[in-house]
Amino acid sequence: MLAAIATHYLSITLLVALPVFATALGQARIGRATLAALNKQPANDIGIKKIFFAGIALSETVALIALLTTAYLYMVPLTSDLQAYARIGACLTVLVPALLISYRGSFSISESLISAARQPFLSNQILSFMLITQSLMQTPVIFCAIFAIIIQLQATELINLPSALQLLAVGLLLALSSIGPCLGLSYFMARACRALRLNRSAFSALFSFTFITQAIIETPFLLGLAVAIVMLQLTVTTFLKGIALLCAAIALGGAAIPVSIASAYASTQVLEGIAQTPEHASLFGRFSIFCQAFIDTTAIYGLITALLLIIL
Image 1 (cartoon, rainbow, N blue to C red):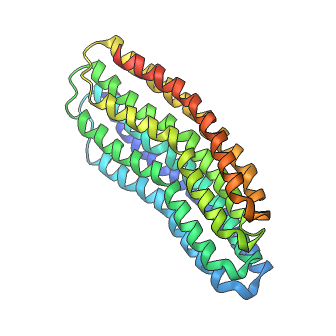
Image 2: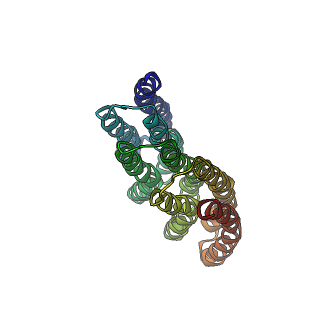
Protein backbone atom coordinates (compact mmCIF):
# COMPACT_ATOMS: atom_id res chain seq x y z
CA MET A 1 0.00 0.00 0.00
CA LEU A 2 2.94 2.32 0.67
CA ALA A 3 4.07 1.92 -2.95
CA ALA A 4 0.61 2.90 -4.17
CA ILE A 5 0.57 6.07 -2.06
CA ALA A 6 4.07 7.06 -3.20
CA THR A 7 3.17 6.41 -6.85
CA HIS A 8 -0.02 8.44 -6.54
CA TYR A 9 1.66 11.61 -5.29
CA LEU A 10 4.84 11.26 -7.34
CA SER A 11 2.89 10.76 -10.60
CA ILE A 12 0.73 13.84 -10.17
CA THR A 13 3.77 15.91 -9.17
CA LEU A 14 5.83 14.95 -12.21
CA LEU A 15 2.85 15.25 -14.56
CA VAL A 16 2.48 18.92 -13.64
CA ALA A 17 6.05 20.00 -12.92
CA LEU A 18 7.85 18.70 -16.01
CA PRO A 19 5.44 19.93 -18.74
CA VAL A 20 5.14 23.33 -17.01
CA PHE A 21 8.94 23.58 -16.83
CA ALA A 22 9.24 22.72 -20.53
CA THR A 23 6.45 25.16 -21.41
CA ALA A 24 8.25 27.97 -19.58
CA LEU A 25 11.45 27.27 -21.51
CA GLY A 26 9.50 27.21 -24.77
CA GLN A 27 7.75 30.49 -24.02
CA ALA A 28 11.12 32.07 -23.24
CA ARG A 29 12.25 31.05 -26.73
CA ILE A 30 9.06 32.52 -28.22
CA GLY A 31 9.56 35.78 -26.34
CA ARG A 32 13.16 36.06 -27.52
CA ALA A 33 12.11 35.39 -31.13
CA THR A 34 9.37 38.03 -30.84
CA LEU A 35 11.84 40.69 -29.73
CA ALA A 36 14.21 39.69 -32.53
CA ALA A 37 11.37 39.91 -35.08
CA LEU A 38 10.30 43.35 -33.83
CA ASN A 39 13.89 44.50 -34.02
CA LYS A 40 14.09 43.38 -37.67
CA GLN A 41 10.68 44.71 -38.74
CA PRO A 42 9.13 47.17 -36.27
CA ALA A 43 6.65 48.31 -38.93
CA ASN A 44 4.94 44.90 -38.77
CA ASP A 45 4.39 45.00 -35.03
CA ILE A 46 0.67 44.12 -35.36
CA GLY A 47 1.30 40.96 -37.39
CA ILE A 48 4.17 39.87 -35.15
CA LYS A 49 2.13 40.43 -31.99
CA LYS A 50 -0.75 38.35 -33.38
CA ILE A 51 1.60 35.44 -33.96
CA PHE A 52 3.15 35.94 -30.52
CA PHE A 53 -0.15 35.83 -28.61
CA ALA A 54 -1.45 32.90 -30.66
CA GLY A 55 1.82 31.03 -30.12
CA ILE A 56 1.82 31.65 -26.38
CA ALA A 57 -1.79 30.43 -26.16
CA LEU A 58 -0.98 27.28 -28.11
CA SER A 59 2.08 26.55 -25.99
CA GLU A 60 -0.08 26.84 -22.86
CA THR A 61 -2.50 24.25 -24.24
CA VAL A 62 -0.19 21.31 -23.63
CA ALA A 63 0.48 22.35 -20.03
CA LEU A 64 -3.28 22.80 -19.53
CA ILE A 65 -3.97 19.28 -20.85
CA ALA A 66 -1.37 17.90 -18.45
CA LEU A 67 -2.93 19.89 -15.59
CA LEU A 68 -6.45 18.63 -16.33
CA THR A 69 -5.22 15.05 -16.55
CA THR A 70 -3.40 15.51 -13.25
CA ALA A 71 -6.52 16.88 -11.61
CA TYR A 72 -8.45 13.79 -12.67
CA LEU A 73 -5.72 11.42 -11.45
CA TYR A 74 -5.56 13.28 -8.13
CA MET A 75 -9.27 12.67 -7.55
CA VAL A 76 -8.79 8.91 -8.06
CA PRO A 77 -6.54 7.69 -5.21
CA LEU A 78 -4.84 4.31 -5.50
CA THR A 79 -6.20 1.63 -3.22
CA SER A 80 -3.76 -1.21 -3.98
CA ASP A 81 -0.20 -1.74 -5.15
CA LEU A 82 -1.52 -3.31 -8.37
CA GLN A 83 -3.04 0.01 -9.36
CA ALA A 84 0.41 1.60 -9.13
CA TYR A 85 1.41 -0.20 -12.35
CA ALA A 86 -1.56 1.26 -14.18
CA ARG A 87 -0.88 4.72 -12.74
CA ILE A 88 2.70 4.60 -14.06
CA GLY A 89 1.33 3.72 -17.49
CA ALA A 90 -1.22 6.53 -17.38
CA CYS A 91 1.43 9.02 -16.26
CA LEU A 92 3.90 8.01 -18.99
CA THR A 93 1.16 8.23 -21.61
CA VAL A 94 0.71 11.97 -21.07
CA LEU A 95 4.07 12.99 -19.64
CA VAL A 96 6.29 11.98 -22.57
CA PRO A 97 4.43 13.73 -25.44
CA ALA A 98 3.53 16.73 -23.27
CA LEU A 99 7.15 17.21 -22.26
CA LEU A 100 8.37 17.04 -25.85
CA ILE A 101 5.68 19.16 -27.50
CA SER A 102 5.58 21.86 -24.83
CA TYR A 103 9.22 22.72 -25.52
CA ARG A 104 9.90 21.56 -29.07
CA GLY A 105 6.68 23.13 -30.33
CA SER A 106 8.15 26.55 -29.62
CA PHE A 107 10.72 26.06 -32.38
CA SER A 108 8.17 26.43 -35.19
CA ILE A 109 6.47 29.37 -33.45
CA SER A 110 9.83 31.15 -33.18
CA GLU A 111 10.53 30.53 -36.86
CA SER A 112 7.06 31.85 -37.74
CA LEU A 113 7.83 35.09 -35.93
CA ILE A 114 11.07 35.59 -37.84
CA SER A 115 9.32 34.72 -41.11
CA ALA A 116 6.68 37.38 -40.38
CA ALA A 117 9.48 39.91 -39.93
CA ARG A 118 11.05 38.90 -43.25
CA GLN A 119 7.71 38.67 -45.12
CA PRO A 120 5.42 41.25 -43.46
CA PHE A 121 2.78 40.97 -46.21
CA LEU A 122 2.34 37.27 -45.40
CA SER A 123 1.73 37.75 -41.67
CA ASN A 124 -1.89 36.57 -41.74
CA GLN A 125 -1.04 33.53 -43.87
CA ILE A 126 1.88 32.67 -41.60
CA LEU A 127 -0.43 32.95 -38.59
CA SER A 128 -2.95 30.56 -40.19
CA PHE A 129 -0.16 28.19 -41.16
CA MET A 130 1.17 28.15 -37.61
CA LEU A 131 -2.25 27.64 -36.03
CA ILE A 132 -3.15 24.68 -38.22
CA THR A 133 0.21 22.94 -38.01
CA GLN A 134 0.55 23.48 -34.27
CA SER A 135 -2.93 22.03 -33.72
CA LEU A 136 -1.97 18.91 -35.68
CA MET A 137 1.30 18.66 -33.74
CA GLN A 138 -0.61 18.54 -30.46
CA THR A 139 -2.93 15.67 -31.46
CA PRO A 140 -0.69 12.99 -29.84
CA VAL A 141 -1.01 14.77 -26.49
CA ILE A 142 -4.80 14.90 -26.78
CA PHE A 143 -5.14 11.21 -27.68
CA CYS A 144 -2.68 10.23 -24.94
CA ALA A 145 -4.66 12.21 -22.35
CA ILE A 146 -7.83 10.35 -23.35
CA PHE A 147 -6.07 7.00 -23.04
CA ALA A 148 -4.63 7.99 -19.66
CA ILE A 149 -8.16 8.46 -18.36
CA ILE A 150 -9.23 5.12 -19.89
CA ILE A 151 -6.28 3.36 -18.24
CA GLN A 152 -7.14 4.88 -14.87
CA LEU A 153 -10.80 3.88 -15.23
CA GLN A 154 -9.84 0.27 -15.92
CA ALA A 155 -7.36 0.34 -13.05
CA THR A 156 -10.20 0.53 -10.54
CA GLU A 157 -11.20 -3.03 -11.51
CA LEU A 158 -7.76 -4.65 -11.31
CA ILE A 159 -7.75 -8.06 -9.67
CA ASN A 160 -4.35 -9.56 -10.64
CA LEU A 161 -0.81 -8.65 -11.67
CA PRO A 162 -1.17 -9.67 -15.36
CA SER A 163 -4.01 -7.16 -15.83
CA ALA A 164 -1.90 -4.48 -14.17
CA LEU A 165 0.99 -5.23 -16.55
CA GLN A 166 -1.47 -5.00 -19.43
CA LEU A 167 -2.40 -1.41 -18.53
CA LEU A 168 1.25 -0.54 -17.98
CA ALA A 169 2.03 -1.91 -21.45
CA VAL A 170 -0.67 0.26 -23.04
CA GLY A 171 0.76 3.38 -21.42
CA LEU A 172 4.32 2.44 -22.33
CA LEU A 173 3.33 1.79 -25.95
CA LEU A 174 1.67 5.18 -26.36
CA ALA A 175 4.55 6.97 -24.64
CA LEU A 176 7.19 5.35 -26.86
CA SER A 177 5.11 5.70 -30.03
CA SER A 178 4.75 9.44 -29.44
CA ILE A 179 8.48 10.19 -29.08
CA GLY A 180 9.41 9.89 -32.75
CA PRO A 181 6.40 11.81 -34.14
CA CYS A 182 6.78 14.60 -31.57
CA LEU A 183 10.48 15.07 -32.34
CA GLY A 184 10.00 14.63 -36.07
CA LEU A 185 7.04 16.99 -36.32
CA SER A 186 8.73 19.70 -34.28
CA TYR A 187 11.86 19.55 -36.44
CA PHE A 188 9.94 19.48 -39.72
CA MET A 189 7.56 22.26 -38.73
CA ALA A 190 10.41 24.54 -37.67
CA ARG A 191 12.03 24.08 -41.07
CA ALA A 192 8.69 24.58 -42.84
CA CYS A 193 8.06 27.87 -41.03
CA ARG A 194 11.60 28.94 -41.91
CA ALA A 195 10.97 28.16 -45.59
CA LEU A 196 8.01 30.57 -45.64
CA ARG A 197 10.38 33.53 -45.55
CA LEU A 198 12.28 32.48 -48.68
CA ASN A 199 9.58 33.08 -51.28
CA ARG A 200 6.11 34.42 -50.55
CA SER A 201 4.74 33.06 -53.84
CA ALA A 202 5.46 29.51 -52.62
CA PHE A 203 3.08 29.68 -49.64
CA SER A 204 0.29 27.52 -51.12
CA ALA A 205 2.74 24.86 -52.32
CA LEU A 206 4.47 24.73 -48.95
CA PHE A 207 1.15 24.54 -47.12
CA SER A 208 -0.10 21.55 -49.15
CA PHE A 209 3.19 19.68 -48.83
CA THR A 210 3.42 20.38 -45.10
CA PHE A 211 -0.10 19.13 -44.38
CA ILE A 212 0.49 15.82 -46.18
CA THR A 213 3.93 15.31 -44.66
CA GLN A 214 2.65 15.89 -41.14
CA ALA A 215 0.15 13.06 -41.62
CA ILE A 216 2.92 10.72 -42.81
CA ILE A 217 5.22 11.58 -39.90
CA GLU A 218 2.40 10.83 -37.45
CA THR A 219 1.68 7.40 -38.99
CA PRO A 220 3.79 5.40 -36.49
CA PHE A 221 1.87 7.00 -33.62
CA LEU A 222 -1.41 5.98 -35.27
CA LEU A 223 -0.11 2.41 -35.48
CA GLY A 224 0.68 2.52 -31.77
CA LEU A 225 -2.76 3.93 -31.08
CA ALA A 226 -4.45 1.09 -32.98
CA VAL A 227 -2.41 -1.59 -31.20
CA ALA A 228 -3.14 0.07 -27.83
CA ILE A 229 -6.86 -0.27 -28.55
CA VAL A 230 -6.35 -3.96 -29.31
CA MET A 231 -4.40 -4.43 -26.07
CA LEU A 232 -7.19 -2.91 -24.01
CA GLN A 233 -9.65 -5.46 -25.37
CA LEU A 234 -7.62 -8.47 -24.23
CA THR A 235 -8.26 -10.60 -21.19
CA VAL A 236 -4.88 -11.26 -19.61
CA THR A 237 -4.74 -14.07 -17.06
CA THR A 238 -1.10 -15.17 -16.96
CA PHE A 239 2.06 -13.39 -15.90
CA LEU A 240 3.89 -14.43 -19.09
CA LYS A 241 1.18 -12.82 -21.20
CA GLY A 242 1.58 -9.58 -19.30
CA ILE A 243 5.34 -9.67 -19.96
CA ALA A 244 4.63 -10.39 -23.63
CA LEU A 245 2.46 -7.27 -23.84
CA LEU A 246 5.26 -5.17 -22.33
CA CYS A 247 7.67 -6.57 -24.92
CA ALA A 248 5.15 -5.82 -27.68
CA ALA A 249 4.95 -2.21 -26.49
CA ILE A 250 8.72 -1.87 -26.55
CA ALA A 251 8.98 -3.52 -29.98
CA LEU A 252 6.45 -1.28 -31.71
CA GLY A 253 7.20 1.86 -29.72
CA GLY A 254 10.94 1.48 -30.22
CA ALA A 255 10.50 0.93 -33.96
CA ALA A 256 8.34 4.04 -34.24
CA ILE A 257 10.98 6.41 -32.82
CA PRO A 258 13.58 6.34 -35.63
CA VAL A 259 10.98 5.98 -38.38
CA SER A 260 9.25 9.30 -37.69
CA ILE A 261 12.53 11.15 -37.13
CA ALA A 262 14.02 9.78 -40.36
CA SER A 263 10.86 10.67 -42.28
CA ALA A 264 11.00 14.23 -40.97
CA TYR A 265 14.68 14.65 -41.78
CA ALA A 266 14.16 13.34 -45.31
CA SER A 267 11.19 15.59 -46.03
CA THR A 268 12.90 18.77 -44.81
CA GLN A 269 15.34 18.55 -47.70
CA VAL A 270 12.45 19.25 -50.06
CA LEU A 271 11.20 22.41 -48.33
CA GLU A 272 13.91 24.71 -49.63
CA GLY A 273 13.46 23.35 -53.16
CA ILE A 274 9.72 24.03 -53.07
CA ALA A 275 10.30 27.53 -51.67
CA GLN A 276 12.82 28.43 -54.36
CA THR A 277 11.03 26.80 -57.31
CA PRO A 278 7.32 26.42 -56.41
CA GLU A 279 6.51 25.48 -60.01
CA HIS A 280 8.27 22.15 -59.34
CA ALA A 281 6.45 21.55 -56.05
CA SER A 282 4.47 18.57 -57.36
CA LEU A 283 7.67 16.84 -58.49
CA PHE A 284 9.41 17.43 -55.16
CA GLY A 285 6.31 16.44 -53.22
CA ARG A 286 5.73 13.16 -55.07
CA PHE A 287 9.32 12.04 -54.66
CA SER A 288 9.38 13.02 -50.98
CA ILE A 289 6.20 11.07 -50.26
CA PHE A 290 7.62 8.12 -52.17
CA CYS A 291 10.76 8.17 -49.98
CA GLN A 292 8.76 8.54 -46.77
CA ALA A 293 6.56 5.60 -47.74
CA PHE A 294 9.64 3.37 -47.90
CA ILE A 295 10.87 4.75 -44.57
CA ASP A 296 7.52 4.11 -42.89
CA THR A 297 7.45 0.49 -44.04
CA THR A 298 10.19 -0.28 -41.51
CA ALA A 299 7.69 0.44 -38.75
CA ILE A 300 5.67 -2.51 -40.02
CA TYR A 301 8.38 -4.87 -38.73
CA GLY A 302 7.76 -3.59 -35.24
CA LEU A 303 4.01 -3.84 -35.81
CA ILE A 304 4.24 -7.48 -36.95
CA THR A 305 6.42 -8.37 -33.96
CA ALA A 306 4.02 -6.65 -31.57
CA LEU A 307 0.99 -8.42 -33.04
CA LEU A 308 2.70 -11.79 -32.81
CA LEU A 309 3.50 -11.18 -29.13
CA ILE A 310 -0.09 -10.11 -28.50
CA ILE A 311 -1.83 -12.92 -30.38
CA LEU A 312 0.40 -15.92 -29.66
